[in-house]
Image (tube, rainbow, N blue to C red):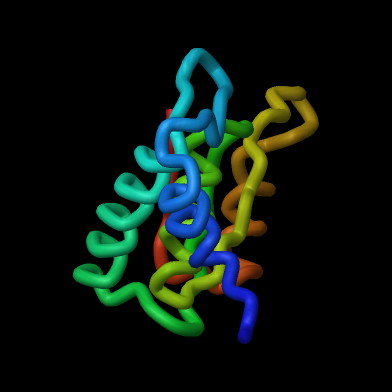
Length: 113
């Protein structure tokens, strides 16, 4: 049997749907909620043409939503490219984020606030 990251939310949701899966920045999800939300997001990605070999950049500091995008992307066979925008230093211009996005040839961008 081949291991697939995409199967983890469903596997845990079947075993313990009400157990906490993720918490952070004032939000939390159970495994059941995580599976449902990542299925919905995976469907949206697929409807927009995102699939195998696509790259989905996630522009965020760190949050529950980053993990949702990771699993949803995996469900459609896409690769997640996390771009941490947590640095607000003067020597960290917005152009460096743009350069990162261009260098990884992203197909889609998820900017989370």
